[in-house]
Every structure is written in structure tokens, then in C-alpha cells.
Length: 269
Image (cartoon, rainbow, N blue to C red):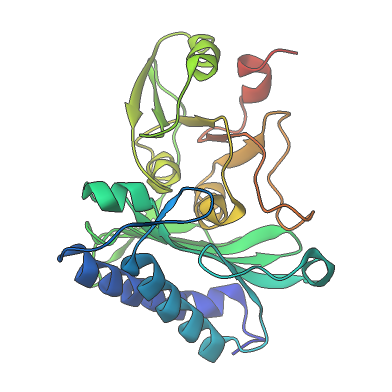
């Protein structure tokens, strides 16, 4: 199936995400150990179990397509720079939320072609919500494995608009920039769910300052873009992937209404 189109691959990838979610929930229901990686970020057996499910599943589905994942050693830039098509995965996005047991964590699977996400699946294992999209085919939400798929769209921001942000990252600079929006409501949410609630029209903006990794954003970016939104760097340029040695993203704006010049509205000239 390695030559299959993103749209042809999507049902199998959605099923694979749910299998990874089942592996995560089996560990979530028990006591588990938290280990600190070299960068001090946490990892658990659930991260590794989901990684195994996804890596093995993708190898069977698309044996010719390479994989970048948070829980696997990335290929060197000298090799990656030649890739036109590859999988970009975070098997458990929001490990801190997993450890807190607040349910706000996701499985993220994206297919990248020519530096852009062309397939994205985001699963919230606890709620059963699955968000998915392929480029040019719109985005949808599936509230459970047995539920019908519901098309989702972003909205024109109301007054006050709703702004979402991280539960664990925020500072005075972020607060200062958000003041420039005028009236708005803010609320925190974990993992890539922040993109998904914008995609379904329940929030309007997510401004992220500080570091994230490419696997944190790619799947949800595809969903948000196909729902009518955008993910932009602070200069207003669309996000691109695997363009340099580092896998760290620039700071960004995820928005539901890309007709607004959010970069000019929020950021100093």
C-alpha cells in the first residue's frame, strides 16, 4: 500500500490510531512508572506501547515510507533531506497530562509530502474522539469507533473570541501579546486537542511561544487546515516540515480564520 494516496490510507490509519489508543488506555488504567528522558520530559510505558503499535502498523501498511517519531531515533539530516514522503508521529502527545490523569492527551499520526501534512489523524483515547483529514478532502470528527463521521469547520471569531493555550507553558510575554486581541476568553487544554477544538469551531486561536517539536503539530495542522484554519509562524508564513536539521518548530499561531492577519495583530513589527 506504499503507493496509495493519503485518502486511500486514511481508514487504515484511523484504525491504527485507535489500536494505539487501546494500548495506551490499558496502561492508563493501572499504576505506571514515569521515566525522565535526557531533556527532562516524561515518558511512560504507554508512550512506548503506542510507538510499537504504530511503527509496526505503518511498516506493514507502507513499507517504503520512512518514519519520524518522538519515541524513536530520527534519521540524520543527510538522509532526511532526501525524503519527499514520510510519516511523522507522536504516539502519545501530552505525556504530562497522561501522568496527571486528566484525559487531555492524544495520538498524532501525519503523512508529510513535500514538507506539508497531507494526512492527519488525532485521537483522544479517553473520550474516543478521533479527528482526521486528508488534503483537499475536508476534515471530520468521529466521537467513537461506532459513531458516524461528522464534517467539521472553523468559525468566524465572535466577540469575545475564545483563545486556548497550554496547561504547562505560558509566560508574561504571551499574556502581553494576547492583550492586543481586545476582549477574549482564555482556557487551557492539553496536547494537540487545542488545534482540534479550533477546527470544530469551539475556539478561535492558539498562540504558542516557546519550543514544540514537528511531531506535536503536523497531524493536527492537517485537520485544522482542512477545516478552514491555518498554522502560521509569527511572520505569517504557513508551517513546513523537514526543512532543516532541527525538528524543533518555530513559535506559531493556530487560527480558525486565516483571513485575519494575526501576525500583524499580535506581534511587534
